[in-house]
Length: 276
Image (tube, rainbow, N blue to C red; front, side, top):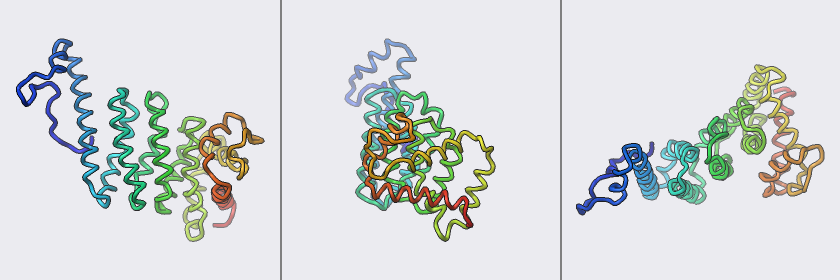
C-alpha cells in the first residue's frame, strides 16, 4: 500500500547461506504461523522502506506523496496490534510531522484524515487512542494551511456527517476543526454562494435529525465557555462530562484565540438567518 518494492521472502536462506533462526522455528509451527510471521516481517520491512524513501524525498515533492500515504498509514494505525509495528508507524508519522512543522508550505490531506474519524472501525479498534492522539496533532497543524474553499468543504463534510461521530470528544475535535470553514462560509464574497449551500443541507434533514441537533448543540456549548476560563473546573449550563471534553482541547487557547473562534461561529450562525 506504500512504495512498491520487491521484498525478500520472510523465510528464505540468508545471503550468507545460513538458515534464519526465526524461519527454522516457524517451519515447526505450521503454515498459518508461517503466514502470520511473513506478513509481520513484510510490513515491518515496508515501514522501514517508507521511512527511508520519505527521508530522501525533497519537500517540494512531498505533498502528493503524503496525500496518498497518510490516509493509509492512519488506516494501519487502526488495525495494527503489534507494538513493534505500531512503533514503526509512529516513527513514520513523527518524520512527517517534523518535516511539515519545518515547512509551512507542505499541505497535508486534512479531509482524508478527518473522514477516518467517521469510520465505524474507530469505535472498535484497539488502536483508537493512538489514532486520536496522533491525528489531532495533524489536524491542529494542517487545517490552517488549507485554502478557504478547502476549509469550507471540510466544514460542510463535518456538518453533513456529524451524527456519525462518536458522542463526546470526537465531536469536539471535529467541530473545532471546522470552525475556519464556518467563518469562510459567512465571509464577504463567499456567503452569497456558500450560505445557500449550507441552508440547503440543513433544510434537507428533518428538524429532529440527530446529527444536526448534535452540531448545533456543540455550537451552543462552545459559545457558553468563557473566553478567559478554558481551565475552569466547570462551566455553567454545561454537563461536567461535556466540559471535560472541551477543556482537553481548549486548555492551550488564549482569551484572544477564544474570541476569534467564537466570532467565527457567531458570524456563521448569523449568516444563516441574514440576507446572503
